[in-house]
Image 1 (spheres, rainbow, N blue to C red):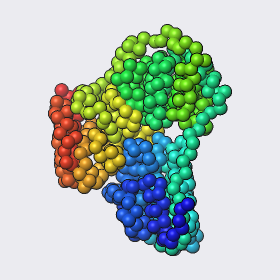
Image 2: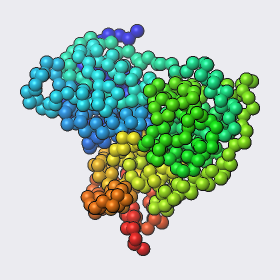
Image 3: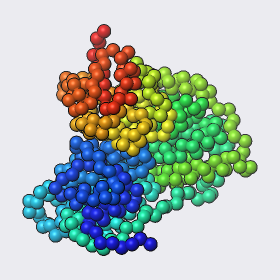
Image 4: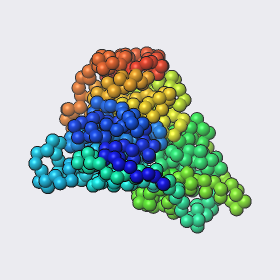
Length: 537
């Protein structure tokens, strides 16, 4: 039984976070959160200071994706908290457990306000609009319970971000506190009858196909075993990229939107979708033809009937469900597996042609990166054409969570701070941030954070002189093309000004050596890749 002790609200908060395994937080101190900062070190919690609160949120996101544990950002009231909102929205969209902790206005603050510093009408309402929940304990003794509730929301079922605000006066008050360790929850399983139906359908399949999303990342070994038992090719969404090593004989890599994948699904007799929303943000060109043949695994009972209604809905933890299916598929009751599988070599060749055609402008750059990046590299990608047209389908990755991308919500500025978060979580793992010249400017100040931490982080900025995707869309609509083309700064010089190394690449033959050197440097390296203008030699 945990002891009851006397603490301030600020210490109770930090002690509860520590009890839940938090050993690092990202953020910026401010007038209203100093009672939290006061107690971080004594409870073994490291603070990583970012240069903007949005960067703290993205870094916590990258930390969570890399470590498999919730990432935590600590910020102050009002504008600081609102600065995290885009990052919280992105974490919600991508099902990432991020906890944003902030002070709140005092318990007896006037309902109509009185001009207190950072005052806003309702922080909780603002953050609840983009998070799974906004929690507000109203006494010191309630703080550990609120922390436990936040971790339950983030980790039991579908991971989602949470906001936790503690009123200013409660942070400063002293009270009796009982800090208890987290209570583990058992992985969910669907009813046995549905598992049996799925096994029968899968065992009889002649042309099975597996679609794997971000919800399959923690179930990579089980996914591989089921794919091998079925002889089923595996295609992943962007967030599922790497869940099956992309040199595995059954791996077709990422790109569920490509024409060859649509043809593959059209010809399948069973489609097993694992941890994917089958969302428009992944499919791009409309829903896949899965009617009447879809078996779907998802921990979220709402998501499992969204975008495509399955023949067999398996609501549960992906790892546990896949293990149960594997037991059935390899047991004596299973039918002989595999009939006449598709010609995977032909499918892979056609899909590769699709991907190369879509990413033609960036193929040489992606090839240069692929030639030098170690197998265990994490690519922290921004919402840039070089990432979603180039790297997502053409750069091989080999481990779950090795390609971080802001899908769905589609924020800009994600890649750099997310890469920092990965390096904090796994300092010995190679990480590269891949950004566009437009998006990097949203969080470019985090170069100073990376430099201060002394991270060996290549920051590859691909410069196509503005917002290239929007420029193309304007042209496709025959609209006037304006507000999308601009001259980028000298990113290499900007990096050096912030304490990084800086290299300008005008010939792609220079890229691989620059990245290789940056991976072993004692500081970040900004690698400014100037793409040739269209139509130039």
